[in-house]
Length: 398
Image (cartoon, rainbow, N blue to C red):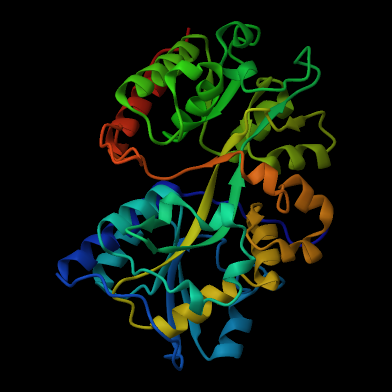
């Protein structure tokens, strides 16, 4: 695949710190969350956005990668995008600017959940967003951005995990997550199993146990009772004692699979594709149980100074033109399948972009909270997820 090389910066912790600072500033205003817009008026001439590097491009990084300039020309809304670089720099910038400065933020599900729960995000009138109906219902109807009958986030880009493996290191082609999470299967690859270093990996293990131990009655891998949570974390702690490793950078997973220090693990499809195109003998399979994934959403600040331009941007961000550029640049999947005309069917097939049956088997992440989704508040919240995950990672491998 020719063209500019994508940038896959994933500074999630920095983004979280920045947007939570935004949340604090917004709450300080002491104003109620506004109702959704009823109409889109003339643009205000400017738009201030915040997010991870690569999710908005104006040609300044690579002149061939630019979807912000055309937006400004079309709408008259000049885009000012603040890229996440370091926690200190962005937290200081948000605090300096105050509530309402950033009109929108592109955020992963847990950060989105925190902002929505804190009242920092405005509900959306999706009827005003052109192209919204083109997004698959499996991506639109996300618990991460819905609350009290309102929709707070617009899906932008998404990804899900594959089971990546080295055929020369794995005796039989793996078909299920049991090759990673089952004690007997995992013991065949001591020290050579790799998992993402994020508390959301608890959700991936829960998805495996949903099938492997139906007596646990796990429904949503991100809504776990204390009993279910204990079973999942016990599994992960046991795996850690058998030498399972964790990665926080794509480069670590790529190196491990390429060099042979990793035999198999949970990776994003783009990593398998990168290695395959480089001539490495690495393959990926979609486990029979399904998998977990994550959607990045555009959110609108509840005190946005430029709401009309923000709505124009929301519609622009899901056009096939923008979706194809953003997906290619970030190595993620577009939410608008019409982007496949520019991306190519091979890439779209790799990402299952037009495969509704696949999407229905993806457990998309949302912030775990006490609400179990059925009226009960017996589920384990995010704070415990993060503390428990830190204990798992700190545990000495066997």
